[in-house]
Structures are given as structure tokens and as C-alpha cells.
Image (cartoon, rainbow, N blue to C red):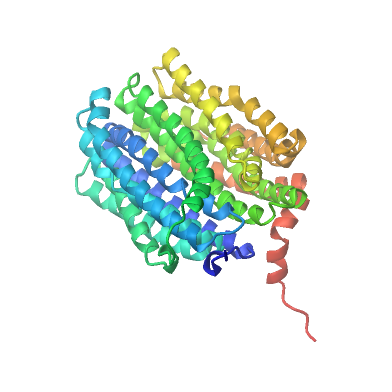
Length: 491
């Protein structure tokens, strides 16, 4: 059986990561802007209600997308019958996901005693089949390392969705505005994905090939289902204890952190999985490549989140106003937790690229159980308490992931820890410096003036601190770009 030429892996390059980074940055910036403007216009109560609807629907949408993407990228070869099988599975997953959301919406609304929730969830239901289409096509295209095509389509959809949400909020829509933002973004992205020739298979599906895709994709779906469900179950359960305003503050704190984390993590994961999958038969080379990914991610992400935690009060007041001042503490807690979570990215990439996605699933399942139990047993009255419980559950179950990846994945404790040490030190120094400076700034300054001063301090400190702690990593990251920028010697 021959491998389909159009979907065979090709070598990856630096430009692939640049396209992913550009798309992620455009998406994060537009989503962040839409979130801030929409939240100011519709208020905390409507934000909390839309958060409940999207927590339910996006869980199904993300699971539908993740079924295909990594499974298609990771396979050593992809035949025409694999392609046909993936297309058939995509249609089934899309139809099933939409039907489940539509049927379950009234029951969820009754359970939470929120009658407005049912029409909102049904309004968001089309995003589920749209995400299935996007995951299927982007998996095929990223297998070719065609990141430019994927990035442009996703960016167009997300920018359109952000504009839709802002316009609707300005026209007086309440909780519907964030929901329709998601539907517009997913719908346009899916429509553009279907214009890709790779979307349409040229062979009938094979049952054996469908089983092979389901074997890997099923585990990835289970992992995403558990990961996404315990966050959304946490939000839904906390929603029975917190006021709508407090829930809205907690949701926005998660959103602000997740928008930034998802930008960095998705670039590292999509680019890294394609790169490491090429090396899946050479574990030593894989480990070297994974360490490089961890170093680059750490140099960018850890100081950013450390600064976010230290400047949280001024950041929140500048972006959202005094009505959301209670969001500052949960934002700081979640930013610190995100640094530790991102430190696990390269280990998760290694085991996924080696064909062992279950090693990412098991620790996530343990964390999910801990979060659900804690939510049922611990009373929470503020958004800060909820963020603290979330972080404590993640920390308590972290050893499970470390031990499992070391013993069954072949990634030693040292290999899991060492790539993050210098980035952790850099983020600690910057975070402490920003926090100290924030205590001596003039009290009469506005929150915007304080935030600009803190950002300036962080930026000024970043370069010399990175050079001091991780000079070789900086040179390795920027060396090829500097070499290309340097003029060629004259003959």
C-alpha cells in the first residue's frame, strides 16, 4: 500500500514556527481585545452566564478537534485509506457532537437553575462541527508542515469572531455577544479549511485505518476531554457557590491567563510535535530537540507570567476598571500556576511524539478527580479561594506526572527538570523586581501609569537577566536569525 504523497511528512523549518507564532499572536491579541471590550460593555453578570454556556459547549468542540489533529500529525505514514477514514470519522464526530450539545442543553440549564443557559448553549452548538472540520484539515496540513495555510485560515476566523463579539456588545447584546463571537470564529475558520484540497479524500475509508486513527485519536480525545471537563466542571460547580459577579471575575482571570498560555503552548506543541514526530525513532535526538523547545518556551513564557502575577492589581484596573478589582488575586495565583504547568510541555511533547499519549492522559485524570473532590468538599466564597483550590489540586498531583513520564516514558527526572531551571530563575528575579517596584511607585499615579512603569522595568531587566542566566540559550535561539540578518561579505 502506498503512502499518499500529499500527506507525507516534510522537514520543518524556522518559518513554520514563525507562522504559528504570528497566527497565535493575532488570535490572542484579537480575543483579548474582544474580551476586555465585551466585558466592559455587558458587565460581570452577563460574562458569568456566557462563561457557563461556553464552558459546556467548548468542551465538546475541543474534543471534536483534538480527535484528529495530533493523530494525523504523529503517524509515521498516512495512506489514502487513512485519509478517507479520517474524513468519515470527522463527519460522524461533527454530527454526534452537535446533537449531544443540542439535546443536553435544557438539562444542564435545569441542573444549574439557569433557564437562560439552554438557548445560549444551543446558540453555540454549531461551533462543535466547525471545530471537528478545523481539526481534521489542520492535522492533514500540519503533517506536511504547511503551517502558513493553517495559520492564515485560523487567523481570519478568529479576527472575524472578535470583531463580531465587539459589534454585538456595542449594539446591546448581553451574554449572546461572547457566544456568537465563538460561533463566528469557528464557522469562518471551518469554511476556509474546506477550501483546502487536502480536505477532500480520494479513496474510500478503510476499517483498519479508521481503527488506527481512533487508537491514537481516542486517547488524545480522552486527554482533552478530561483536561477540558475538569476545568469546566470546576467552573460549573463553583458557579453554585459564587455569585455571578465573582464567577465572572474568576472566568476572566482564567481567560486572561489561558489566552496567553494557549498562544505560547499551542505554538510550542504544534511546531514541536511535527518536529519530534520526525525523530520518533531516535530518542536521543528527540531529547535534544525537546530541550531546545523547553528553553525557548521558558525564556519567553516564564518571565511574562511572573510579571503578570506581580503587576496583577494594576493590570486588572487598567484593562477592566474597578468593578473587576477582585480579579487581581486569582489572576496572580493562576499566573504562577501556569508557569509550573508550562514547565511540563516538553515532557508531554516527548511522550506524545513517541506514540504514548496515555502518559499525558493518566496524570490529567488524577488531577481531574482531585479538583472534583476538592470542589465538593471545600466551601469557596471568593474567586481567589477558587483559584487557590485549583492550584493546590494541580500541585498535589504533579508527582504522578513526573514519576509516570520517567518510568514509562523514558524521560528522566533530570531531563524533565533541567531545561526549566534557568528560565525559572529568570522569572523569579523579574517577578520579585516588579513586585518590589510596585510598592514604591507614587500612590497618586493612575493604574495605567503604574502599569506602564512596571512593564518598562520588566522589559529593561529582561535582556541583561536573560543574558546572565542563559546566554547560550539566547544565542541558540537567535543565532540563525542574526546570521541571516548579517550582510554577506563582499567577494
